[in-house]
Amino acid sequence: MQKQETLTKNQKIILDLIEKSDQPLKAYSILFDVKKKGINAPLQVYRALKKLVKIGKIHKIESRNAFIACKNSKCQIAKATVFSICESCEDVTEIHDHKLSEHLRDFKDNKGMKYSKYNLEFFGLCKKCV
Amino acid sequence: MQKQETLTKNQKIILDLIEKSDQPLKAYSILFDVKKKGINAPLQVYRALKKLVKIGKIHKIESRNAFIACKNSKCQIAKATVFSICESCEDVTEIHDHKLSEHLRDFKDNKGMKYSKYNLEFFGLCKKCV
DNA sequence: TAACGCTGTGTAATAATATAACATATTTAA
DNA sequence: TTAAATATGTTATATTATTACACAGCGTTA
Image 1: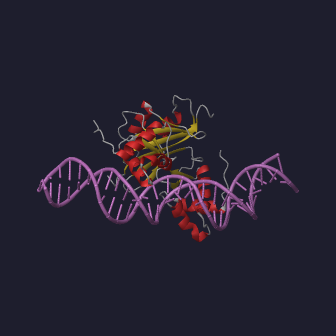
Image 2: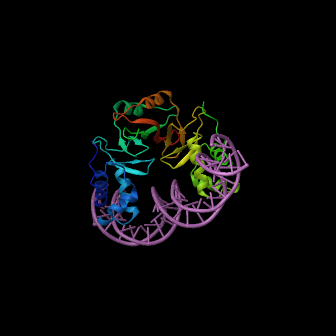
Image 3: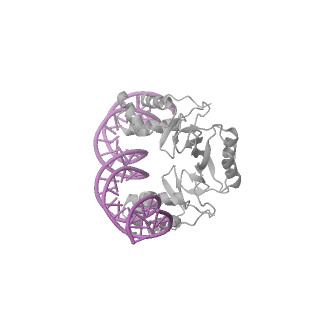
C-alpha cells in the first residue's frame, strides 16, 4: 500500500481546481484561476503539478501540455496512463481497459530495456463529433 | 498506394538533417543547424516539421518536444507510433511489434469513439543505463 | 489565358510553455 | 537537535510554438 501523501497548501489548491474540471487544464490557465488564492508565479504552479504527477494524483496529457485528475483510486502512481482524445472537441477521457493494460504491462522489446511506465494517447473523433 | 509526395527545398533540408540523426532533434536545434542553408526563422522549421509529420516521414516525440525520422518504410502516414525512451540517457527507439500493434489497432473503448491514430511512449532504462 | 484555390515562402512580432537561480522556511529523520 | 529533504516566494529568463501579413508558384477550370 502506497503511503498517503500529505499535500501542502499550494498543492491542495491546485489539485482541487484540477479535480473540479473533468477536462485537462493548462498550467497558465491554472495560474490565472489560483491567483486569487495567493499563487502568483508560474513556478509555483509547475512545482505543484510536478509533485501531483509524481504521486499519481494527476496525469499530464503530453500531446496537449495539459493536466487532468486521475479518476482511478487504484492509480496511486503515474505509471501507466491511457487516454482518448477527440481531435475535434478536444474531449479527453482516461481509459481503464484491463486487457489493454495487461498487454502494455507485459510488453517486452528486443533490446532488453526495463520499462517503468508508459503513456498512450489515442486520437480520433468522439461520438458527438463524428 | 500513397501518392509519393514531392518535398520542397526547406522540407528536404530539414528531413535530411533529421534522417542523419538516429536520435530526436528539437526544433530550435534544427533551426541552428540549417541556418547555413538559408533557413532563418523558427516558423520555417515548424512549417516543414508539420508537413513531414503529416506525411509520415518523421514523428514527434510528444513527451520530449522532439522529432525523429521514421525508419519504417511502410509507415507512410503517422497513424500509429510506439517509442521507447530511456529516462537516463534519453535514447529513443521506434518500436515495431506486430502483436502490440494489433492490440492497439483493434482497441475499442466503450464510448463509441472512432480512432484514427495513437501515440505510445514507454519510459524506462535501457540496457546501458540499468 | 485569366481567375481561383491551394500550398509554400520570408519576415517580424509575439504568445505559450517551462525552468534557473537565489534566499529562506518548514518538515522529516537520524 | 542538527542535517537532509522538501517546499516557498520572487525575479528573471529559457524554450517551444504560433499569428499576422505580403507575396510567389502551380495546377485547375471556366
